[in-house]
Amino acid sequence: MESRNFYILIVSITLGLAVFWLTVYAVITLDVDLFQSGQTIIIKGEGITDEFTISLNELKSDKYLQIENQQFKIVNSFETEYYVIYSGVSLWSLLEVENLLVQSPLELKFQFWARDAYHSPKPINLSIAQNNPTLIILAYEENGSPLFETGPIRSVIDDTVIPTGEYSSQYSVQKLATIIIE
Amino acid sequence: MKDQENNISEDYRETGFILNIKKITNLDLLYSTIIGVLGGIISSLIPFSLLIKVWFPLTGGTQLVSGHHVIWASIIYGLTKKKPAIFLTMFSKGLLEFLFGDPWGLLIIFVNLIEALFLSLGFLFMEKIGEGETKLGWAIAGGFGNFFQAPFFWVINQRWYLHWSLWILAFIFAFVSGMVIVGLLGRTVKNYLIKAGVPTTF
Image 1 (tube, rainbow over the protein chains, first blue to last red):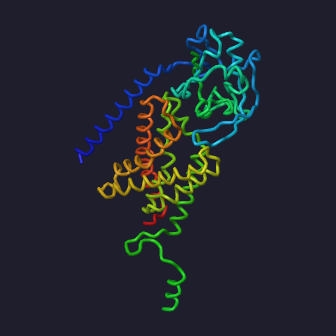
Image 2 (cartoon, rainbow over the protein chains, first blue to last red):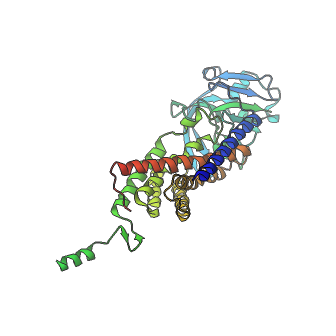
Image 3 (spheres, chains in turn yellow, brown):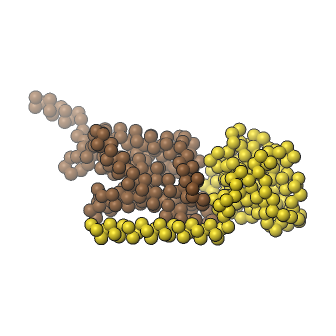
């Protein structure tokens, strides 16, 4: 019995150490900012003038195009379609009003990153946001209520503007923390 | 009197433990349904992942509480010691999740049944090696039962673009959650239920 318990202890310690070091490795490799405020998002990358930080309250400002209670079509990788009503700010409006871009949107791509190191599968061309300002948003409300479990901000892209072969659910990034534009 | 006994044996099927074959009893069906419905409601409506998000920073960490989806199956096994009861419970639970509008639709019932299969295999294996009633045996069986859904959903979600370390962490968490919640907590709950006077059917 004693040797059995000893083996259980050894396996538990090994597992604990593996989890600890894998977590540290992931945080460092993926450049996760553990201390970023949950109420802000950062826009950064080579495609913009300077790193730009904006809070949830500022995002709701009327100087940006606000999308209110609009239905978005989302498709997941199992090809299940569902519709959700979101309110949020237009991504393109934010970039345009703040005059953040250093190049034409045709030459730039954007990617969403969450606070927990989840990210949208690949960078997509920014001209899609320019041509569809009401269909790519940074949502802060779902069905009229502030985002709770998935928020406070999440990216939402309507499935009608998503590139072929991609799934809009994978670009709806919960707990949005960073937008990288390159 | 003799005639009456014959009538009884003709009108009613014997249930319970007969000739070394375990038959499903009405009480088993009742337990499976009640616990399955309870599990379906709790799995669908309570955001357990919030418990993890406050302290583990990375995606996949919520797997640490995923065991609450399968604990119902280990409790029912403890009360009935019948593997078909595990399937009945998980089917009831999957049906409830489907009716509550699970984004995966009917697939969620399939996932619940596969979890039932792996948990049954886990218990079977543990019983074969003499660990059927120990904490270790229950923990490993629970780990097997809960592990399947993590790689299944990560593959079906096509999360190839996520870093490999996140995949490994999610899988480890799914197994550990199965060990702690499905196995150890399930065993403890089962013991307290029996101690409280809930009749077993084995």
